[in-house]
Image (cartoon, rainbow, N blue to C red; front, top):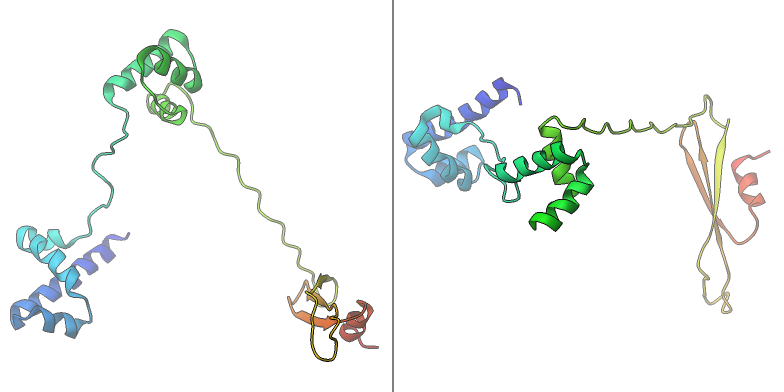
Length: 194
C-alpha cells in the first residue's frame, strides 16, 4: 500500500479522536462520522500509548508458526544432505526411520531451498486461452441443442418432449433461444429468415 494512503488512513483515525476529545461522547462521534464504535475502541489505546504512529495499520502476519522447522532439525537435514546428497523424499524417509522425526517432503524441500542446497523448481508458465472472436456478425454461429424434461399438461396428458435450441454469434455474443417440439430446421429458419 502506498505510504500516502497509509498516512491518510492514520489521519482519518486521528480526526475521530480529536473530535472525541472535543465532544466527549464516543457514540455521538461515531454516529456523526458514520463508523462503528468497535474500531474506535480498538485504536484508542494504541493512540493513547504511541500517538500517531500507533494509528498505522499493523501486519497481520503471525509472529511465529507452530509448525516451523526448528534450527536443530534444519541443521540435521543439511547434515544428512551433505553426507548422502539425497533429495527431499529420501531425507523425509530417513528422518522418520532413523530419528523419529516426521516432516513433509515439501517442508524438507523448503529447508533445502532456503539453505541454497537445491534450486527452487520453476513453475511452468500457464498457457493463455485462445479466444475465437470473428471479425463480423454472422461469420460463425455456435448452435447447441438440449433435451428438456418431459412436460405433462391438459392438452398433452401423455406428455411431450421439447428441445431448447441456442445460437450464439461469435462476433457480437448475441444469443437466440427457441423451445420447440420438432427439428432444429425451425431454429435455422427463425434465425436466418429468407
